Image (cartoon, rainbow, N blue to C red; front, side):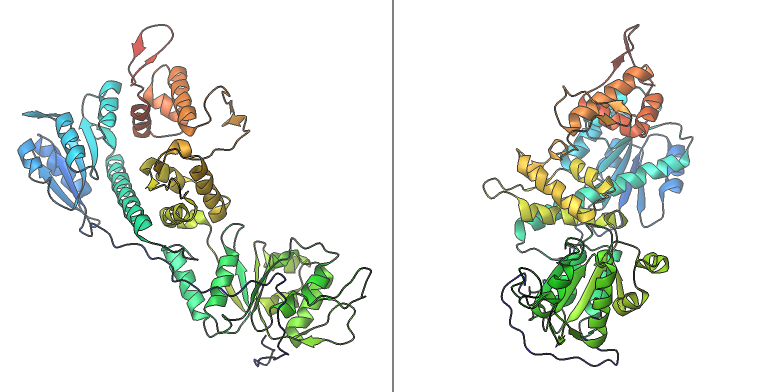
Amino acid sequence: MSNPAGGTLKGPEAGTDGSGVEPAQPFRTPVEPPESLAPEEPLILVVDDEPLLLRSMRRILQGAGRRVALAETLPEAFAHMTEPGLAVVLLDLKLRGGSGLDFLERIKAERPEVEVVMMTGHASVQSAVGCMRRGAFDYLEKPFEDVHRVRTTVDKALERRALVQRNQELERALRDRTGAPELVGASSRMRALKRTIASLRHNRSRVLIHGASGTGKELVARAIHAVSERAERPFVPVDCGALPESIIESELFGHERGAFTGALGSTGLFRMAEGGTLFLDEIGELPNHVQAKLLRALQQGEVRPVGAPEAVPVDIRVIAATHRDLDRMVSEGTFRADLFYRLNVVRVGIPALRERREDIPLLVHHFLRCYRRREAPVEGIEDDALQLLVDRDWPGNVRELENTVESALALAPGPRLRVADLPIVRGARRVSGAALDETLPLTLAAYERAALERALRESGGDATDAARRLEIGRSTLYRKLARHGIGSVRSGVGGPRSIR
């Protein structure tokens, strides 16, 4: 423990009795993402027999680190099929000398990683669903009145392709790698966090970690301890919010035999961490009288066990953590300002999972590796299921994601996790204000299909209105209809109606 003058306060070597003390763990180097399989600038191929439209599409799409190729005929389009950077094809449904649907099927057979956006001036639910069933990513109607929508559709197709490639890379890594990293993530926020941890290697200052519940505050504390000079000494974690107020002082500082009724004597967690690191999690939950004693321990480098006549020197590093706003608690008088300043020497913030969504695929595959069953190892996760996890806000952060993957693995029947394997909140009775049909199977797919059918029924088959009711885009509606094999809907007063 450092004293105010910057020196180190030494105390007697205190052996551990095994009570609550965890041996120091080696800090493993975090896994960085594999190199991209296709580092070239993505190529966007536009296939249409209207020269004017082709030139317009080039102006709309070119730039931002991507190339655009044009083809008026299918033979010209075939010539681009072998280009490794081919990422997205915008394909007219009706071409001179051939069918866009036939070329779509060829693309998905030979280059399944390439996303295809169909274009047509004759939109109908049958043509849209037919394209989606054959693997098209989206569907655009000509003429293009909204240039922004064209760009946005292509951007989303590129993002989808990148996600699929990333999923494939991580699945290969899942098969090839062993060992579990302590800190998983390669986003800019996580790289900055890892740099901060590395910079504390030779720093003895106290650290205050701030982050929402489930972000991994203890993992960060362990990482700081593991790279420090105290790595070979104990790391002792304490959840301040879990200790009853009546015994928290005794647990932290120890007590003498006979100090109170039933007291048999205890070393206390401070002295158990001798030479190492004491991690005080949820420091904001400490009662005020314990805050005063903790402040003295930090200032003097010594603790006084309950009932002891003299204080005992200790040499430890204190790392504290909280999800609460200590600055506000100080201003409100519920947390001591002098203690806050003692703890807040180096401040480390952990981002919420929603602020680093690009790390979710890496985390998912990490948890797959950690929890997959030995007798039936899961090889990976389907792209739609991974996209669902990436899109979620995760209020419970990494802990909630970990629980979701573990729960899905416990019930997954196949070699890859599907959307249907991901757990939903059991016992829920209402979603978006509408009662759930409890006769449906407890799968996301079943409820999604029911929601689609209801939206179509209540909108009378109007795609725009159905998409509005579901709060999704019309192209997303078409994709979901194709996935569930829904091509038309009966209005109730007539025959099947096409979606407009």
